[in-house]
Length: 129
Image (cartoon, rainbow, N blue to C red; front, side):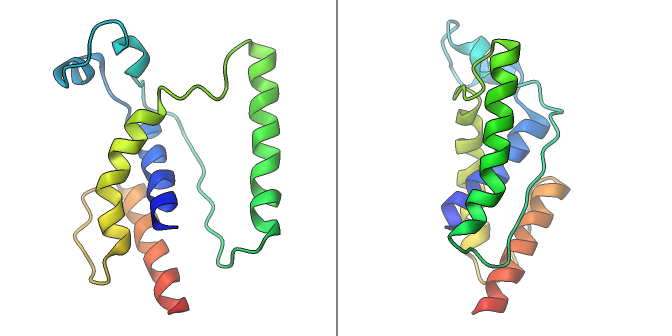
């Protein structure tokens, strides 16, 4: 569960701040995939945290969004489920996992939104313990 939450928070961070072409090239990425790994950033997102996860919670929250995204993609003739941008989220998630697993209050080195989500998630987890 922590890994999933870490990926969720990290993807929001990736969409908010992105990655420039120069940053991609500095990582040693070959020229041909580099344009697909650039992320503009400044893409607003919403993150919902539920206090209890029941079998119907994901269905109620995710299904309408997936249908909306798929419909918009069909209208605009784009692949709504393109995975290139997911790579940055996976990298950022590796920084987030230790923060979510820790029981001590770590110094958070993320943007204010990601830091607030991590703190809230940890408070909810500690209340259940």
